[in-house]
Structures are given as structure tokens and as C-alpha cells.
Image (cartoon, rainbow, N blue to C red):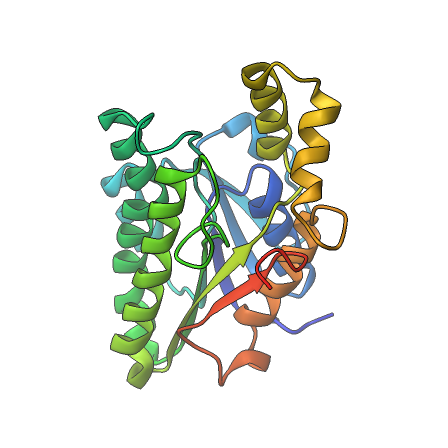
Length: 249
């Protein structure tokens, strides 16, 4: 497959889960991928043709500027870094609010600012931001900070798409439902402990939200990311693409 042959891509939070699947999928389609993550250990097992890795803390603006600024070309930027906080507005602390928006939103603000000048100069580029169905699209219990920050990502995506559509740059968001990942598996464990139920019961509650009767896979999200990164989606920008097993029908 060579839908991305010749393209240079950066993926954040590529050490595991959705980010890892996207980095691997982009490389499999011919892109040269810089897979970044705050965890060097997670990146150590990410190898293969078209893939190289670098440690990147997306809450460090100087590190973002240095990493993206060192690239001679960037065609595709995929922002996958994020954190999920559990609880309502009454449970939310100031620190959790700040952390949620720093990692989920401000990091994207910084990476887009670093990537856009080069893309504008070449009059070409695709930015893909991982948002969520739990956002402005759907109210989900005990996801106050997460939903607020993911809604902000959709707004940032649409605003940036509108600002730079005339420069040949496309900006889209992917809004997954529940996806099987290390992060989700840990939430299953944590919420079982918090609710006094078994992990099997916690997992079943997550699955029950999906009308398809299962959670998604990282590779399914990655397939959509490949499409949005490729020239096949050249008429698509400023959209929140829902991939959620029918949760938000």
C-alpha cells in the first residue's frame, strides 16, 4: 500500500493504543513517520520500515518547537496525546482541570502552531486531532473535564480549518467511542474498584454503551486517520468524524 508514499508525518502519544496504531498504519502506507511519546520505553518496541522515534513531552512548548522545527518537511500531523479524568463538575479539582486542558488542548495548540508555517509555505498539509464522542457531541456521565477538553479540540479543529483552508491545509478531528487500549483497560480496573464491582462487570458496562455490542479497536481508528492524512480526503476539512459503534446515533 502506498497511499502516503513520500509524505512526512509526526504522531504524538505513539507509544501505545490509538497513537501507536496510527503511527504503524501511516508507515505501512508509505509515510515516513516520526513517532513521539513521553515514554522512551513505550517507543522502544515501535520499529519497522518508515518509522523513527523521539521522546516528546507535549506539555513542553520548547520541546515541541525543537522537534517539529527540526523537520525539513511535515505533511501530516496527528495529535493523539490525552488524559481521561473521571468525575463530575463537583469532583473536579483545579489541578485536574488544568491538567486536562494542558495535555488534551494546549498541546494541540502548540503542535499546530509549530507545524502550520511550514505547511503554509508548501501550501499543503493535513492535521488530524483525536477528540472524542464524549465532547460537545454527547453528554457522558463522570467525564466533565474530559468532555470539556475534547469539545475544545473540536472547536480548535474547526477554527483552524477555516483559517487555513485557503492555504491548502486540511484540519479534521476523529471522535472515537470506547476503544480497547491500555488506557481503557486501566479505566476498567479503576472504575471497578471505585464502584465496588468486579472488573468483568465494569468492562460489561463499557461495552453495553456501544450498540454494536463491542468496543472499537485502535486499528479501526487508525484506518480513518490514514484516510484523513491521504489525498483521498482532499475535499474534507473542518469535520468531526465520529467512529463509535453507533453510540451517538
